[in-house]
Amino acid sequence: MSEKLVTLRRFLWPYEAEQAQALLRGYGIRSLMPDGRFLSWQPHLSVALGGVRLQVAESDAVAAEDILKTAFLEEEVRCPRCGSAIVKQGWPWWVTCTLLLGAVLIPLIIFGLLACATAGVRLRGPRIARRCGACGLRWKSGGRFSHEARSEREANRTSES
Image (cartoon, rainbow, N blue to C red; front, side, top):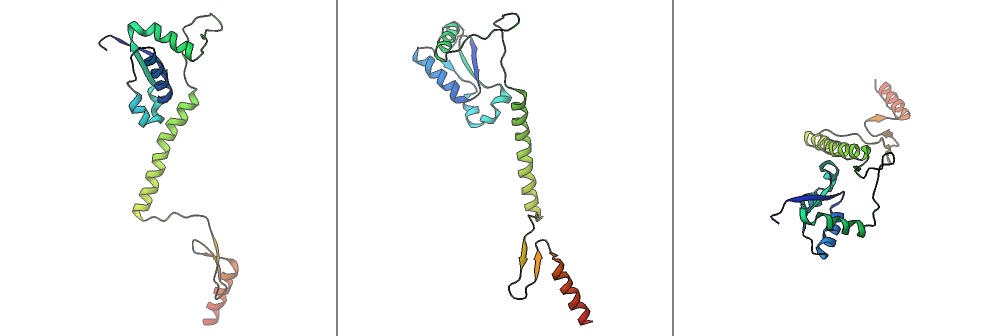
């Protein structure tokens, strides 16, 4: 393809772009997906990069667009006020925020847990009530004794003195 390439469409997921590419290939139109391989390995970055681009030669762009419109049964979207066909579509803001927040917070949490484990810091879990089968001592995890056990210990200390 020595001709100038134009971006025909952008798809959120690589498999959608692959379906469109296979359809165009069936009609003899060559197309490229420059982001397809990278985003198939890192699909969570699709929104940040603007999706997977499907590119065709400039001379085939009109025919390819007609094929895709027919195949995907899309109606032409027009502006409700002025009727213009120049309409940009995008993902809701919360999708981008959620993906970016998850991409930042999850590695930080994992890094924090690994740093604590490496430094020997013991993270406290939920308190578990325990009881000795031999002497009947009751306590909770974390070294805190229950009220009865505390009073028994204090009584033993005073009797020893």
